[in-house]
Image 1: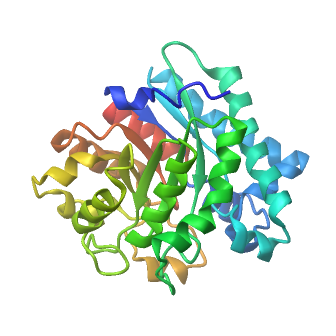
Image 2 (image 1 turned 90 degrees about the vertical axis):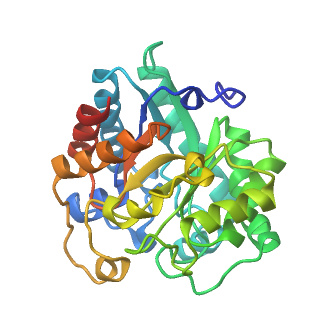
Length: 312
C-alpha cells in the first residue's frame, strides 16, 4: 500500500534530497553494460542489484545526517514500451520490472525511514524518445496511451507518486499527467532545458509550465528542472512571474556542457561538487519554495553531500 500518496510530505516546506546520476555512475564509473542507457535490467542480477542498493543507501545516509527527507526514485527512466522492445522486454515483462523496482524502493524505505527522515517512493519515467533531441513531438492523447501502462504499474505496486524526468515538450508532459490523473497518482513534471534555459523545442520554460497547467487543470503537484547545468536555467527563473512558484525541484547536471557536447563525450564530466552546491544555494536563496534537490548526469554522492551541507 502507498504511504504518502494522499499527503506528500515534500509539499509542506521540509527539504528533501534525492539521488544523483545513477546511469552515468553505473556506466562510466562502475563499468556496467547498459544497452539504451537503461538501469532497470540491472536489478535482475545479484551483483548489480547490490551495487544499486549501495548507491541509494549512500544517498539516504546523507539525508539522514542532514535530518531531511528523501525521495526514493525508481531506476526505471527507460522502462517504457519502446525502450523495452529494444531491450527484449514485452509488456508483461515491463510490468514486472516496474513493479519490482517499486518493491525495491519500498524495502529500502522499510529499512531506513525514521520520523525525522520521511521517504517518499516515486515511480520514475522518462520520455518516449531522446531526452536531448526529440525527433517526434507527441500529441497528448498519444503520450497518454504510451505512458499509461508504466504509470499503472507504479500505482499497483504502491508507489506514492510519479516523477517524469527529462521531458522535452508540452504534448508529452500533458499526456503523462493525464495518465497519472487516471490512476489518481500525484505527478511531478520535470522539463529539461538547453544552455539558453529554453526547452529543446525552443519554447521558454515559463511558457511550457503555463501551457501544461492550462491543459491539465494545474495537474502536477509541482514542476522540476533536470538534466541541465544550474547556469543554464538560472536566468530563466529570474522573472518574478507566478509560474516560477510552481517549480519545487532541481536535478541538475554536473557539467556545464550542452546536450550536444555531452552526447558526443566519451568521458564523464563531474564538475566541481562544491561549486555545484553553491549554485543550488544561490537559487534557493532567491526561491525558498524549491524543496527537492538532487542531481542528474555526472553527479554522484559528493554533489548531494555538498548540496545538503549548503542547503539543509
